[in-house]
Image 1 (spheres, rainbow, N blue to C red):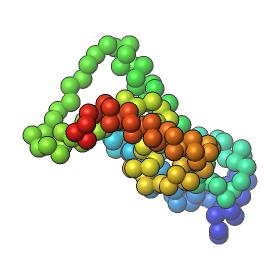
Image 2: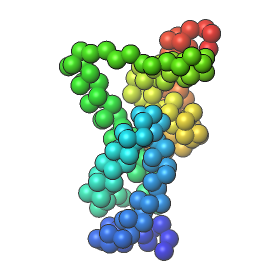
Image 3: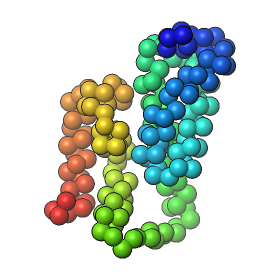
Image 4: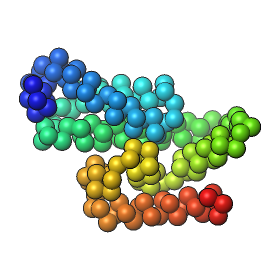
Length: 171
């Protein structure tokens, strides 16, 4: 059964087809979630949420050929929603967490970079994650996010500039 037939069967209520569809895309979706959260438990929770949302919204999928893009877009929305929820929770509790840093320079630099990426605005963070953690091209990111390539390039340029400013000239 090809991808479009699988999507069509899932849209018509075939739960096995939906299961096969999600199984085909789970690795890619997990990688996107892990790039956002850097935490296996949160990434798995996000994958579960995407599965639920996709099941409920499957009849709204307009073009079965783009199911991969559609699922990735749902994952990005789930990750952004969860990050916003966590930020609100942290702000309301007004607690500060201290990160445990290893003695090695590379571990420190990685934490510093992840922290700087987490401080970027939503779209800038998404573009950086998709470009450098998921190795997507500008064209693929543009198609995924539904914006022109020029806009993606601008966001990428601004995000990299913000990272350079945040991290200093040593980077």
